[in-house]
Amino acid sequence: MNAENVHQDIDLAAPDLPREPRDGTGPAAADSDAQAAFDTESSFDAETAFDTEAPFDTDAAELIEPAEHEPADGQPANPDFEPDADPAAPATGTMSADRLAAKALEARLLGGERKLRRREVAAGAGLSLLSARKLWRALGFPNLGDEDVAFTERDQAALSTIVDLVRDGKLTEEAAISITRAIGQMTDRMVVWQIEALVEDMVQEQGVPDAVARKRLVTELPNLIDALEEMLVYSWRRQLNAAVQRLAVRAEAGLQSSEEGREGDEDDSPLPLARAVGFADLVSYTSLSRRMNEKTLAQLVQRFENKCAEIISVGGGRLVKTVGDEVLYIAETPAAGAEISLALCRAFTEDEILPQARVAMVWGRILSRLGDIYGPTVNLAARLTALADPGTVLVDSMTAAALEQDERFVLVPRPAEDVRGFGEIHPVQLLPGSGRGLVLD
Image (cartoon, rainbow, N blue to C red; front, side):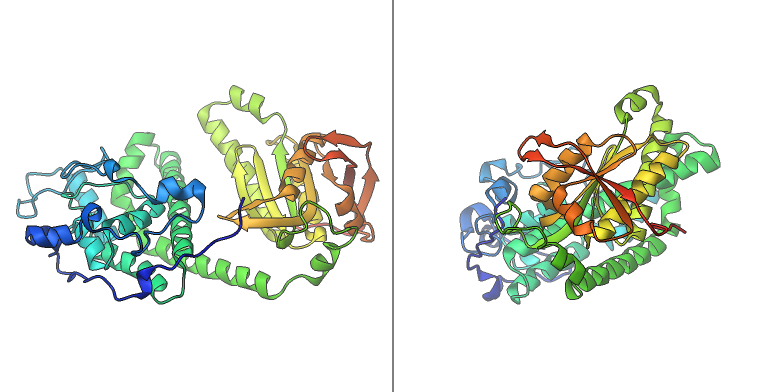
């Protein structure tokens, strides 16, 4: 991965394009000359806001869409999109009760009725349509046709908010798009998770089929929106504060340990962050999943993720991601990573439902990008996980050197192994020493 971002000069700091009033009028209602002024194919300037080259080649196809991919006027690219009914048409007698409830919920969530077309929103924020589409795509929104009345004034305000950060010099274009994509992807996963949890709870508590629960949820969600939104903002602020503390108070023990046993020519030496990287992998998950029905498998996966999240959190680490039967986590120091790894291994060994786990942990340097982590340290931890016996924790020799003076851990060397991409390595089994280990409430 290329970690360098080459910033090109853009004109977001220059005078804005004319902004449209937020009263629902705009270029779509104006004459043809006004429409042409915002036509991305006829007036697009390569140096305008958000219209520079993508920072990474791998993202270029996502951020800059060729003109020929533009949906034809009046034809939405998203087949699931349903244009609003005529606002003047009476609601009574034209919509079912379920549809009316869904419309009312939508108006509350979106901040009002859909009144604006995409060109009107882009113009109101002072952007070309292509630039606005880059941000919408980063958020995960589908393409819509020019005549689709799909946006509200809140959409325009949100677009202006992120653009103003760039124009004020607080963010580069690349950072703005990356942050926007993070928000879109994380909130999308969060919403799906929350809906599935609510549906599952209704199925179990109310004894209704899944399809009925999903339909009924539309009428019950209005009672939950404010509380869920409040918890989201609260959690984001707490998580941001925790991240700031990790930046401001770097662990001295960790920084010192990251240099122990190093000669300066290791593959991960140029990477910025010293972290303990761990993997935990459930044993025989594939064969188990084939014998389970959908409900039992869902319960197993949820139990696995919940237990991992709890242990990693109590140990002061961070759960980076879960992929099926595997979890990736990091910690600030070798000792913290070792405590978490031993606790995970012990928890799965003692669990009456979950199978045992193979666990591995490596102390080294990593690159953190897009909410994920990269580098040789991550790859080595994954390789060691595959070498571990069920119910055991493995570390590499460098990590063992960082832990050998700590009485809380016992280190047992194992025979050398030839590992793809790393050559010969010397695994060391990590066992609990003195002390109680990580204590869960």
